[in-house]
Image (tube, rainbow, N blue to C red; front, side, top):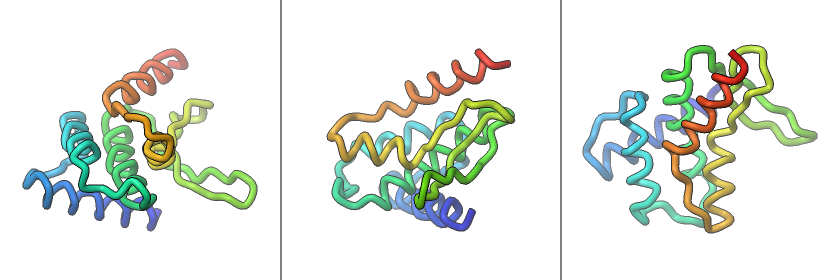
Length: 125
C-alpha cells in the first residue's frame, strides 16, 4: 500500500507540474496521464516514473469500476500491486502494464486499456 500511495503522489505531483491541472482520479484524468506519458518528459529507461503513472491510472480504475480492489500479487520472489475485480480472475497490473509497454517501445492507450478491463468485468457480472 505504501508503494501505491507513494507512486500515486509522485504521479500527481508530476501531472500538476507538467500540466498545471488538478488530478482527482476520475475517468477524465486519464487524458492528463496520457499527455504526460506522451510528452517526452519521462525517461524511458527509468522504471519508477512509469510505474507511478500506472498507480495513478489504477486509482482511476479503482474509483470508476465498482468492485475493483488493490491486491498484492506474489509471483515467486516477485511481489507487485494489482487490481482485482471482486473475487474473480479479472485482474489488472497498472504499473506493470505501462512499464512493459514502454520497455518494448510500444504505445499504451489508457482509455483503450480501461475499456478492455471494463469489458472483462462486464462479462463476469
